[in-house]
Image (cartoon, rainbow, N blue to C red; front, side, top):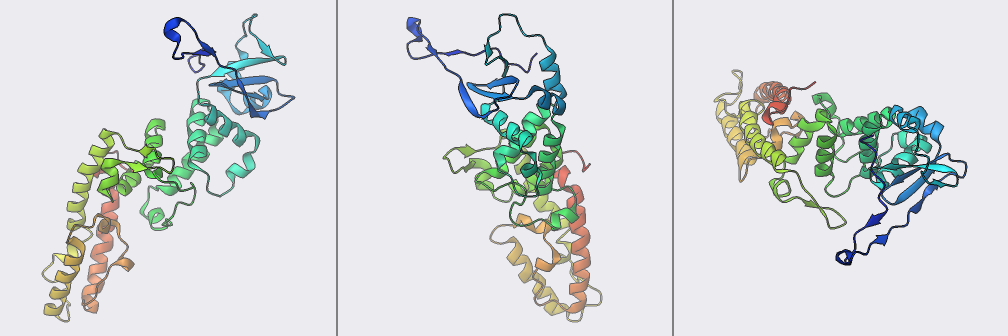
Length: 318
């Protein structure tokens, strides 16, 4: 089966040119049940698990188990060995999720590596409940409706924050086809150009980066957003008179100029297009102008959300 990697028992060393190889001894993981009936090996790590339990959760595993093993295949403690092409850490995290599922499905934040393993391995082996749980967590952080966006916490709530996590999530979603989060995630990516272009250093010293194709889409989309938010959400700032009921046209015009200066100088603030009206400073506007500006702002904000995918050349919201 294509998903199964050929046995890898040897690796090259610095002396390979002389024809010598180092034998890698398999490592027994902490997931090792004495009554287990089958052994998974990922990289050089082995896991002794229960065939019937895994077959119940995954039709792909069930099909793998149904493939007759070669007669000369070695056994460990009477158990056949199934070699997987996945990373040992992904397999370990998914097995923990399967055997200790309650803690993983609770509404608490999970570390990013756990969510990534659930998504990757869940998709590959049709462990649908793990895959769906990972997708729900991603969509909760990067919603597809303005109402859900408004309800977002400033902090991550379903995935444990770590440096570089935004780019790691975008790359994971790209690899696994979770396109529903792209628009909201890209919008967050364009808030700060420096990490978008240079990457963001993780705690371990490695750097999380986006591929050039996504960087390009984000940068081009950023320019479109700046234009659109001026045309829609912030259109009330360009009106000679916000309201035909204005109580003091001269004072309100001066107030609009000052608000515009704060928004556009020294650099345009790209977050204004989806900013809540309650966060907009309208000092100096009369009550009638403030009321009409609020209506224009809210209508424009809804329009901006509807247009968000198009800024990045993505499909419309599902």
